[in-house]
Image 1 (spheres, helix red, strand yellow):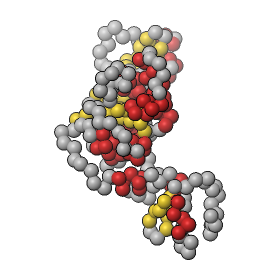
Image 2 (cartoon, helix red, strand yellow):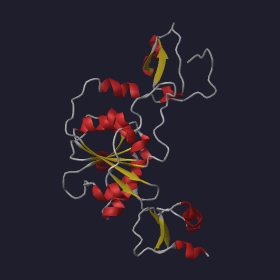
Image 3 (cartoon, rainbow, N blue to C red):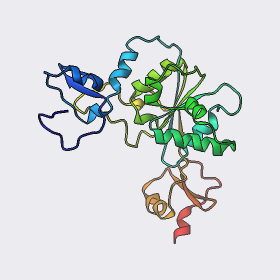
Image 4 (cartoon, rainbow, N blue to C red):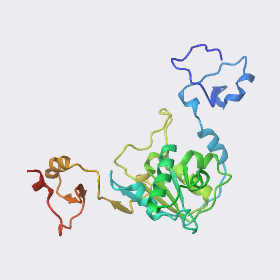
Amino acid sequence: MIYLLEPKEIKPNYSKFFSKNEFHDFSKLGTFKDDLCAVNDYCEIGMEIDIVRQFLTFPTLYDVKYTFIQAVPGTGKTTHIISNANSIMNGEKVDTIIVNTCEGRDDVGNRMNQYHKIPILSKHKQNKLVRTVASYLLNNNDVERTDKMYFDEALMSHPGALLLCAFVCGTTDLYFVGDFMQIPFVTRLPDFYLRYASLPNLIKITSVLSLSYRCPVDVIYRLSPLTTDCIMILIENIATADKTNEESEKNDIRGLCR
């Protein structure tokens, strides 16, 4: 490739390039010999265009049930999904679990093995049960219809992408698990205005996981005077924060730090 303006960092592989007012597959670069072509960081992946082309027409789903579980850090969002989803190990009809990254997919698969105390799932079975958003939308020829679909860290993806996963699957029972106070979905095209990008603005919170197991004692001690609706307790030497108004059988943890 010959650059008119050589970028500071040349990516080893591009999937797209821009020319004649649209993006093209990088494999067709040789046919644009006399045209000006441009690449940027987006062109390294650029999968959204291929996804949109596959879903220009798709069936409408009716009577969809949405469950939005708001979970603060340390409450066990992934554990909640693993413990509630029908898995491929028990012989029943399985539920699909959608995650955002390949690392998240592998983590969920490994934690499923530990939770159910079973031999390690084969990669094929694991990839059938736990999929990334991008994989599910781009490689949708082998998906199986499931009764339920769970979305881990749901707010890290655009809601439209998650609903497309539901359309592909054909399920009408969706479970969104995430924390709207954490970093939300961020588009890689900052100049492109996205509508309906906030899941909490579209779906009401159904339930809240408020018991966090990730609270150091010193942090709890410092923060406890700042809130009136958060009870600090100690469970098996693990400091936790439980947002509840029921004070029965709760121990004030501030006395432990004096």
